[in-house]
Image 1 (cartoon, helix red, strand yellow):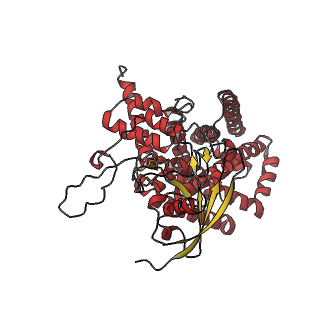
Image 2 (cartoon, protein in one colour; image 1 turned 180 degrees about the horizontal axis):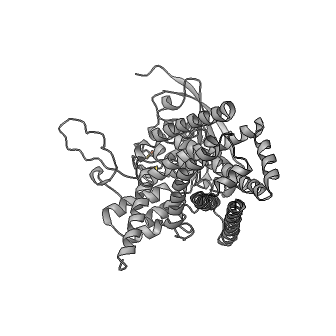
Image 3 (cartoon, chains in turn yellow, orange, green; image 1 turned 90 degrees about the vertical axis):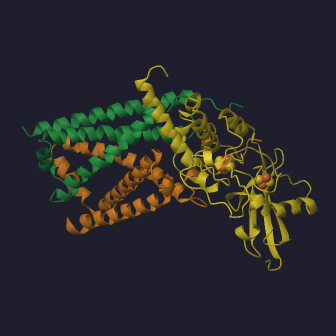
Length: 245
Length: 129
Length: 122
Ligand code: SF4
Ligand code: FES
């Protein structure tokens, strides 16, 4: 169902080493049903081999391709060009916010991954155990066995979208807090609560709900942060009555 | 390699509503009104000190407070109070896990109430009293 | 690379106080507003009205309670905004001191003022 080809301009953030960043335009002929990542790969393949960006799976599983597309966090491998521009339009691609830029579109996620590890983020959580407050979408009625997983793919887009992460580098961030809530609700491990009951943890959130809006994986970090607050308060109150904990 | 990192100097970008969701609009409104109301609280406390100086000082001050421009300022304070207070209820509710899934609707609802309240107060201030 | 290092700074306690103070403000401010600006025939009370109003001990109690909650909520809120700017520990202790002095000062001044006005009636 393609309607011929579109002419769009990719306006890409470039940054190497200590040089100042700049934007570089790449006019491209694309199929509007291609994904933004396809365009970026094409630029790398045919126009500029020095362009760096991260990607792996091409199907929203690895979480590597998160970027800022026209100012909004997107997994570029599943974002159709049609959804972010029009024929003759521009697609501005920038690295995620709130992470140091290593080169062009590649950001340094090392500390983010470390925090996920400290939060004991679980690799795989079936939707049935995901504790979200609403029903997951129904499975297709095709007689095949289905199992839906509710996983943070560690793309970092929630941290990029968070207005608090903009100024407070020590804020643990939505992904790590969401992971803590998920792990705590399945394991009941109390030490997780003391990790987040602090200024840089659940109490730093100011309810912007941006994380939930950009999360590509239905983790709903904002809801989980609120839920984690409840669990922290509940635990605190319990501790008043049972000194032994 | 230090660019693009979180930095306190980026605080002004808190107030940039572009590409943001209603949650952030609420956050922006809440923060601006918070700062404004704190300033007002300080001024209010200082001005009430006129009471201690006796009837003349205070009643002159009240006469000044009834001039239209001061009234507009007061209406702004009332509006800020309504926005901050009603959105505060939204934040308190969602912080206890209540209504998180309808936080957008709560935002629009409370904002409407705040604007309505402002109109009502404005009507009383300018046309009744 | 520090990862997560929990620091006390703002725990559940301060946060709960902020929320509870906020909620009581919503209630008391409602009463305060209606009395001071709608019931008062001239829109704003004049001096003798204020003094008469403060003869009621419940009013004095309510206004002082209101003062304390507002100042508390405002200062914890300001501190919370400053915390978003990631201050160093030493800077934060200075901030804490300034806010505490401002808070105690404002509350003391306000209570003195309320009692002073109340005493004018006799
Ligand atoms: S919570 Fe969502 S947005 Fe954040 S890292 Fe995980 S998958 Fe990405
Ligand atoms: S390339 Fe793996 S999520 Fe996009």
